[in-house]
Length: 232
Ligand code: OAD
Image (cartoon, rainbow, N blue to C red; front, side, top):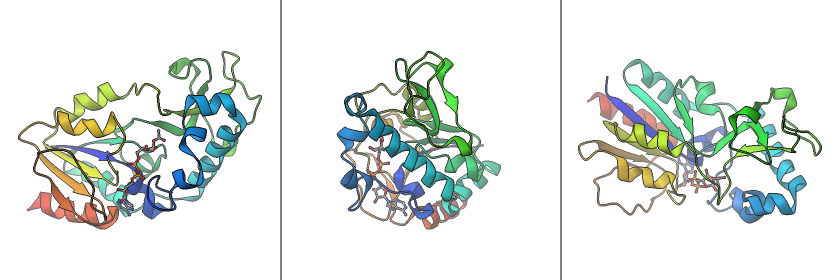
């Protein structure tokens, strides 16, 4: 089976009603990124940061996977599909994708404030536990914090993501502005002979000399078109 590796970003979940970050009216317009997505912001005001991610987690309970997520999951019947996502939602999994690598963490999980990367203290929250409070503690006695990779923190899953990217026959970029590294740098690991597709309703600036097949559409329509092109 052909190996398809997908790199998805916030635009993948836009049609489900999740906010993107850098579009006009996106999350970083409303909440300064240095306040809610950096270790310094968390140290300064943990309550605000915990509340911000509680709100995101609540929003996730109210949305559903869109057709784009569903079609990617269905592709597993004809292709070997790996999804590398920058998204912290669980919509790929809920649509049925079996192999999802989360580069930037997962909203449904919490971890230790002292040792965020330590798997031992990572805990999956049940839907009814979506609201984390100040004083809720990890097993090491520290405040439970969102299991999110913030700016300036290491991205432990990048090595695994690189390994899959290096074996791709087809690499598909969906709904990401390709502004954030190391995720955007995965493009440099795509084998020479692999085909690259990009699905986004807007033009995305990519600093690469590679040939990229652009499908200028939203995620649902775009993945449908990708499928018909791959079957040609
Ligand atoms: P951005 O908000 O930077 O980019 C979203 C992209 O989705 C843009 O290129 C949009 O044009 C596109 N888009 C909008 N609607 C779409 C649709 N219906 N279908 C397909 N694409 C659509 O989000 P990311 O690139 O994902 O990190 O941002 C990367 C990281 O920066 C995030 O993971 C987050 C953020 O700061 C952390 O929080 C650590």
